[in-house]
Length: 322
Image (cartoon, rainbow, N blue to C red):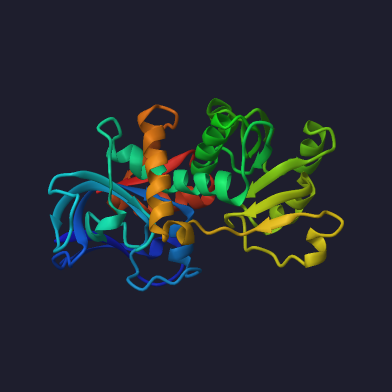
């Protein structure tokens, strides 16, 4: 029997409940994973709320553990191998689960299951944003909203390695210390801070080359004023409210911006992109260039993990431990 967290009905965190289920044997091309750690991400909240349809009503898109069984035609993996995965199919909130074998990426000996589960999806997202959405390198100046969040910290560390200058927004002094330790050069502190004026001052009126907004709501429209002409705004979430409608005239010609709405789920559905970026993230963890830290909750406390993430009380990554 496997223990899973299932959504009773779309809505608040209290709609999560623990269940025991019988797992079928892994099918052709599948492995069964005995999970040691499960990543908690904002997409899980979107799934729980009903924003993203969830056929099996078990949220979660990343985890790490041991191969416990494998189906026919699975090569390159053995029983007992330590692996991690990110992306669809959903259903990560479980003590055990079946998974397409191609998604299972072997873990280096120096990377723990907890480190991988807290970092893999966020790291792949950051690789997508820094390479595919806008090429970030030496001389690039970027704005990261929620710089002390799980994605914000990973994005900051990887951008810093590329030689970029990072401006970050955070909600409190405590979160500012966390973001500063990750490598943010300039911090704008406070939920109600005038970050547009601050960014213009820090860039001598020019604006940043690229801005990453996972907050949505009214923040996205204000972020347009933070970016230089012919720069890019990447809308990557809506933790602060629904994504507003933006008229084309708001993007150009006066501002001459590019507005991106990239999906890491679409990105990781390409096998080559997924394997390449997953290896890059695990290599960075193994080399100490990324820090796979996170706050751990028992699987049966998934409700509390969602409450803490959704309220903004959490700092850094969150994981569930079966």
